[in-house]
Length: 404
Ligand code: PMP
Image (cartoon, rainbow, N blue to C red; front, side, top):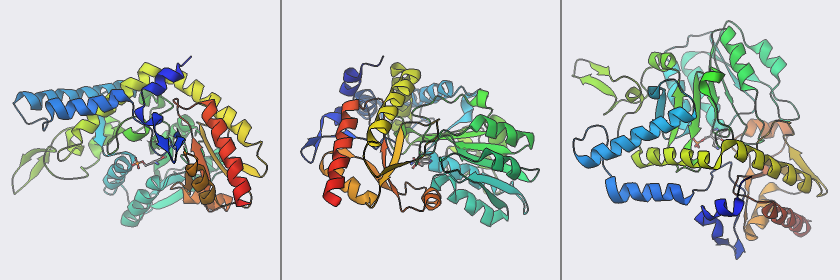
């Protein structure tokens, strides 16, 4: 059992007021809040050992390097990567996807096929469209169902000898659907296609074991896992990363530089050009430790309770429809009320101190499928409570009366 009062005390922001009301933060799928343990880690870095890493012989540089590389080890253990150099620090999920998409420019030929799903965030669509434009490869789409699940039977028909890469998210940010990634990966591998999993939404709730999944690439952002913005990780199998060319040229990623020829550093540095977000990387490691101190199983169980409760209570509101009704879901509820615009609902509940997200959630194809402009999305974290859900339900009812 989680001690929610104790956990909430770790998050200073939860005691602030918004528009005169205690903050109820239900926009966790966009960005999670930051506990004192992580804030202290950031302050400690800038107060005590702020320095550039890897090249310095002086004490501060060595301390910063040790802390940064320690974070890489924490992240490596968390995802159960086989080798620490398979963990590449990035600026986030978007960066990780672009890094792989850019590398694939030199690996694809005209006639090759890549497969995406209808449930993706734009950041797992657009880089691949750009890749297809550059290479002449063809983008195929796994369709979705009314429940907001992937149509696995259709996927079976799409994948073939021509498939070189499949990229789907582990969890849909717009609907919360947990996708059957193990099966998707297994089938792709029977055709020797690689698989990239966008783990941005799954990572705060599910501890992915990259070896058990046998996934080729797995990308995440720290800011959805109680860490800071502007940092994330690309996990890639060593053999996969080795065959990708570097994404950016610069300092840190080289072996030898002459004007005739430059040779590149080995992993992970080949993909880490320039001064990285050192403090961010260190704080990301601390955030993952913090989540383990709470416990991933406990987090998943409690968030599921919140999801079930919120689903039941919101559905009592007449005219309210929830999009995404898959049995396997994280704590995300996307909904609309008949006749009302999601933006208007979001604005009114904000006046009552409640933060939800409205719009297409960077997943326009999903909205197009349902023929709606967007939804109101409430996404819960382990520091939320049932009382806060009651506040949301009351606020939505009030919005409904005001907008009628
Ligand atoms: N994929 C998914 C499923 C997401 O939810 C997000 C963030 N909303 C992203 C990718 C992009 O993450 P970032 O903006 O941190 O790069």
